[in-house]
Length: 604
Image 1 (cartoon, one colour):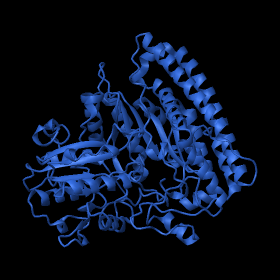
Image 2 (cartoon, one colour):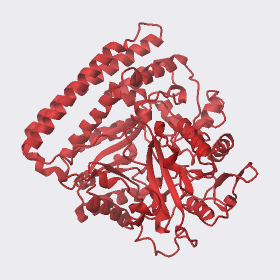
Image 3 (cartoon, helix red, strand yellow):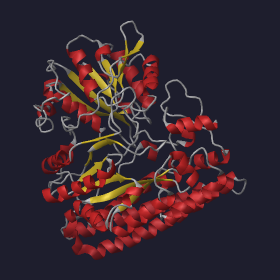
Image 4 (tube, one colour):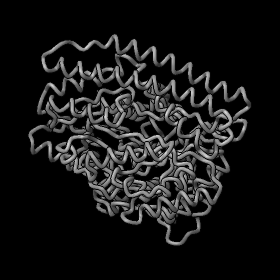
């Protein structure tokens, strides 16, 4: 729906509490009531995140609606472009994702050809699975290249774009069209040349920033009142760690005034969660903060205070958070118990590697042994799902080291996780790790318009193993489907012990039977992956040949059997009149996880 027909424009729950706050950079002095804006998230079939749009699209919608502009948020399948869907808007804005960037640029060409007067803008802002392409250290160069090579793009906003996007919309609404007035903006000038504004982007002001709009959540409300969809939420941006490959610590700082970390007040963050819980029945929350324990020494107090606030407000929910390994070791048993009581079920720990040499190249704080202790502590603390971030392949590896990396995952009981065995380090331009690879002579020259840095391996035999593991998801798509199902299994195990699902305990026996069967299947899957990985290593070393057919057959069998087990277990619960909506949610997996082979640092 366009213009005034869009009922979401009249929904003020997300911004009314912020509208009159003094000193807000998100209140416009201009009349934006006639402005029509389309915010687009491009996806494609197979993307497990198709029901959600990046949080900053909702953020921009709330800011513009707070200023009486008319906004539509659209999730668009890449092959389904229709020019009529884009007609009638003054500003069309996209959130670029690294996997679909080439297809996005094609869509922009089509829009420009059919709608020559459209104003087309790109921005990122909040962290979205480390896909903040326009906030990386080399973003100014990358943005300039994109605008120069793609005549359909009018402007790209660098870094934290909330205030900048509002300023750009003011220029369009008033018909001044002077983009040099827009902070941190790379734009096409009237003469066709590419320029960059001189003013830096102001940092996020969490005190006055309205809550992001939720234009699709009501579609997930079930008959009993709970919502089958999850909600991404963000209480902070940035990270105080300085991991060399990651952009979170330096994100949004290119030509901007942003700080390494900034966060909402605990109470306002809880206000948003309570709004989503009470109004939409949301019970699954994906906290996208890259480092939920920051800032610094006060981070644990903030985290425990958040848990206590959830309990005090009576919010029934399941949360997923990100923590560093060294933080887990600082948590007391009673603090972990409070987190679990609040509904924190899924904890993601960035292990990255079990090799000291790799950890040093990444500038990780936690050692391999500290991470091992952290995972063991979480596994022993109770029914949490402790999910690892692990990078199996980096360009500095030797073939002989892959066995040690496999042993490390085996010691953590995580070889069933295909992503742990197949992930490649992704290198963003201008990061410390990019400089490291250039110094080692392993970085490929950056091509015009590239978001990622390709690389060579010190040992090309490692590259062959990486290619082989990455190819599995295409040779056998059931690998991704089973990966998703195994994650769901762990999520259900953690959520079964969530206070909001206490009524399910009467079927503890059925749960234990199902979980025992799931554990057996996971052990079989881990053994199958270990064998195939070892065969790939042997083949790269000049030995035998890795055969994917037997692994594929095992994966297909396990996928069928585990789906059946899920159906039987769920049927048992519902057959006894129990509500299972607080248990089941399809786990989010990105296209990088499910379709793309990123060996050698390229998206293919």
